[in-house]
Image (cartoon, rainbow, N blue to C red; front, top):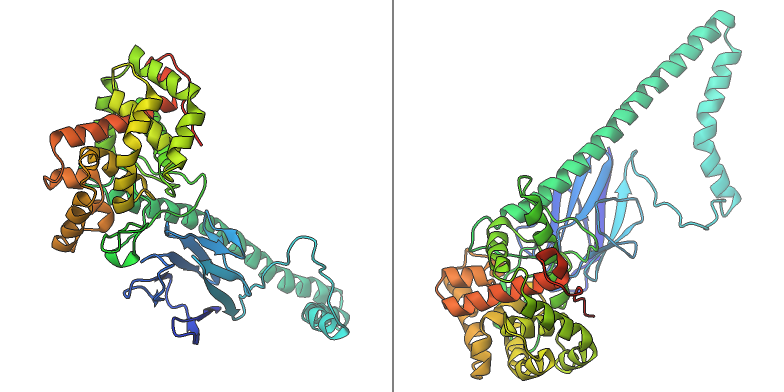
Length: 439
């Protein structure tokens, strides 16, 4: 039986060595985890270790700072080997496998596989030579009949072991696939109502996680998803094909407007609201003209956005949303909005897609210079609803449900989502314009 140990340096700069217990082991900042490491670089639930006999598999739980295995970003479950180094957002854990089933870490490609010394050669050869010597001795001491039975008793166990190994690998692959689906299903199921996130990164987060930028120390900030480029987003099996097209475009739009939200999720109820708003702009010549204007002026829009450290596609979509079904000067509109957007961003943040949409929803507050109002509102909501996750509090859906957004604010946010989605593939919505993809 193989045991897994982690060695790491704790917050007091002391070396710790812990043994992984059970078939499912959670590592993170929260005190209720199997291994709790008090370090702001870790998410509340950062990574998961699963045991399958003598095999240990690590998965990132869509943490804010990601998980690396031997320096490579972990974007899917991976098997741990003796000597591996697990990096949890900057906190390193050294892997030690102790037992008969322990497997050494594979040498990097190009590294010599020859032993470094005669002693190493003897150590490597002796385990392999022993069974061969035993078999040779048995064969030499038996007659022809004994050889047949001897070979049978040697081969039969090997055949049985081979079958067990094949079945074991098949079970492991099935379990990993099923486990991945279950983990992602947890993310989707966590947002079943209109009050939940439209797009979230999937990690738990609390007010202790700290601000995303200056001026938001008291504001709970959600953790982002794993930096898992290309990770699949779970969707309902019975969703119509058209909805899936919209879902894909919304997801792409969300990734582009946020500073670091690589895996946004769109659930069914919000998707329905966004789709309904999109219908109001299908075939709109004005929207098409405005998108083309944004494409022609992309250099100017990028310059305006970067002057305030905002994403260009966020600024462009904000301007397009303000123009709506009216033709207008996209650059002039973006330039007129930038100060209000920047002031709100400083207090609310724009690291995550959730925050960007809230900025749009309360843009009218920014125009009036009321930059702190929504930040204070969300802080109070988080305090008054301790059982509600901060990622849910920081969505237009929860804010509207709590009466903290007016109908016009909520509608403006939906218009932003709808037109931003349309701009990703205008022709899919009957609009004659090229796709808007800004850096």
